[in-house]
Image (tube, rainbow, N blue to C red; front, side, top):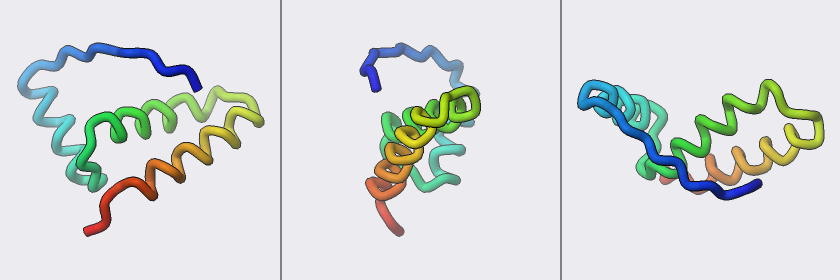
Length: 68
């Protein structure tokens, strides 16, 4: 997958909601959380070969997530 820098501007309330969602899903890295959410969103419109690649990447992200 291509790597592209994306800048996100959030209000203070939006940032609190973002952090709350991260905490609920037990992510500590913002980058991993954003990548997981993006892949989860585009999974519905991807082709079957892309879906396999997305599934592999999502599994790697889940494994990289620290366990509590």
